[in-house]
Image (tube, rainbow, N blue to C red):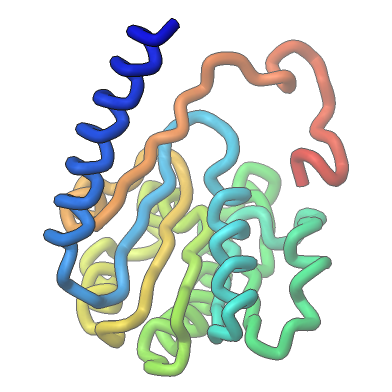
Length: 199
């Protein structure tokens, strides 16, 4: 047991030295571009977790919901009365329900105007572009327009992009990219989405 404890202590000392070195090297302060992508669940949930964190520190936060905005959202229900939170919702909901490219494009363009205002506001600490990847994939938004807004945003502003199949140009410019991988999904086995758990 003593040998194991000695090895563990030596291992933790090495780990601490590596972590301390990384912390010392991280000297730049600015907002980040974070991407939550992949075919697994939890991308939007993770973004709302960061929204909660930022609001907890009293920061101003903007959320744009491009796909699931008309769906119930427990996080939005809980946080929407916070005066530091602004939420804009695309009016058509799921694009596979509407099946109307023209209407979806117009709705996307309308809510994108709200996004552009948030992305230009130096007082907005965090902006979430929830499910924007679909808007790019379906051609409702132009990637160059989105990149320009991201590049010109205030230096201290962090942006979280969520959705499957994140555009390669967004991935290339991101500071952190997290890919959620599906191993098993209850829905594929006939289990309904659960209120308070899935939404």
